[in-house]
Image 1 (cartoon, rainbow, N blue to C red):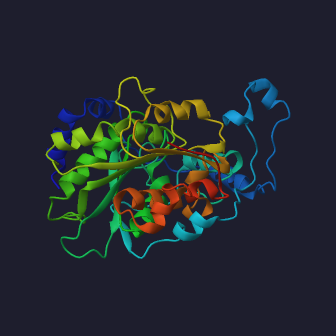
Image 2: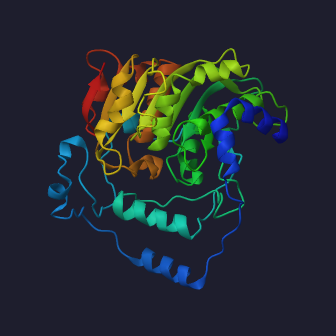
Length: 376
């Protein structure tokens, strides 16, 4: 792919992304020093707690009811939820072998500490690896990667998931989730900008996938079905996905992808993005998945874009989850199972996934891993 041609093209299409490029620091490798290694060893030696520990005064100090999704800061035990019917059906890796345009590796000191925060404050069991983007590595902090099935026949087109992390999240943290989706037959275009707030990173990934689909040397050449696009994001990325649900179709049409159609959007613990003030409401099937024990994005903020959405929509709270539980390994919670089930539902409409979201007896409302399920 001609990177110069792509960057010049995208700079004129997405002004916000171009501005962010100007302020992206020069990538430099950060090597660990002995004190940091000792600190890492010390943190790793701290045993996980067996149950959540909530400061006794936090609910009174916050003045916010737990029914609104905020429980205050807690020391968390590793998330452990018995799989329900949805996870039992959709929680295993798919049949496809997958590959990626980037590989993950051990994280630098900041994201090693970040993993510890996820462990002790967000109930995450398994630490994530990193791409080593700037400032901890040589990859730019603004970019995109493709994660894709490797066993597709020439000319076989599959749906695409445009994926985004949250604010400050190292994009490598999303790799295992992207691999899970790709194993189920999706090309995943992961876009990231360190900020990840308003959706420019998702436009970047979509534009890159459009160019790569036409590039003979690209591993996803002639494999991307832009008539079946699902937007997925976590935290600020979730807010970006909801914001872009009403914008991405027009953006893809403008850059020459006339066949583009946004089939659905999934916001996982979504931030408010632009508070739905400068973007059209979602008119496509919309699934919002907040955490029961939300400490970063209270449910009323997650509901802003959801309440304004005018298409079919579902709200389902993940029982016992913290904000960062999604960043755990895919099999540890229902999140990735629901991403695959919902993506299959809006793209394929197979009976197994359809029964989760449709009908008077829809299974989403009955799964024990979910509470407070709403359907409109």
